Length: 298
Image (cartoon, rainbow, N blue to C red; front, side, top):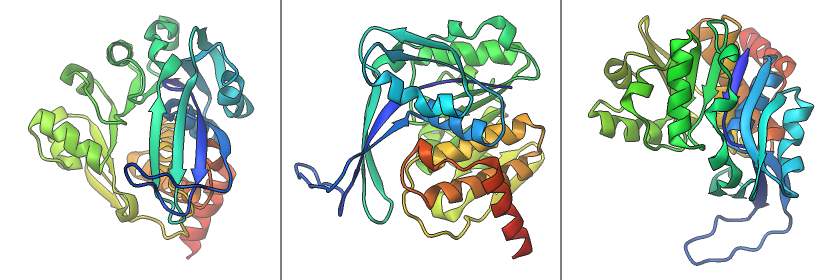
């Protein structure tokens, strides 16, 4: 089982001819409203890939909450540990250009009131994978990482967006997932080399660095694994990193080795990039299976 502790947002997506420069207003023709939040995105990706997922987080008592939770519900994610708090549900404004590049602004809202205590001790056991990001309160994220490690769970942290995390918590992880910018941020604070291998040496945990169009590299005790990016017609990269992390966690939770899990996550993220939107672009297990079979035949 995967226990995901993280953010829940409603995304307002603006497809634009060009991304706005500072001080510039760019008019678009339409608005797409879709559930989002890194935690929710990754939970949906994992659930669609076949994992049993329980979510702990918070939404506001407002009109945004139902929409923000809609795809989590449709994907079969257990929402019994999602609190309803005073204030606004988390919300993101996302501008996307025709090349699939994006600019994102986020109002954390209720996500700052998510508490790790919602994940009771009975959920933390050696058979559990705990999945976190960096969009909730640092104190709660770090405390859950340490509790989960002490209980023998596999702990997967996507340190996104890059931000403070106690070194003790980082060293308690099973897997750290970062992109190149996030890897550089962690490396500066650890005074380590900004590579998967450098971070692995500094922390002693498995490290996965996503490289966008250059693929992905992982460093573990068994050595380094590199996979090239899959060639697809990119429509929208929003959510691709979350798709990758959610599917990676699902594959590891099923007992796949790191290389197989990376290949699966890589294929799923590539499919995500061929579709518009965020959570709605996450592929099903059958779609990822088909992409992997086609690559094997090719």
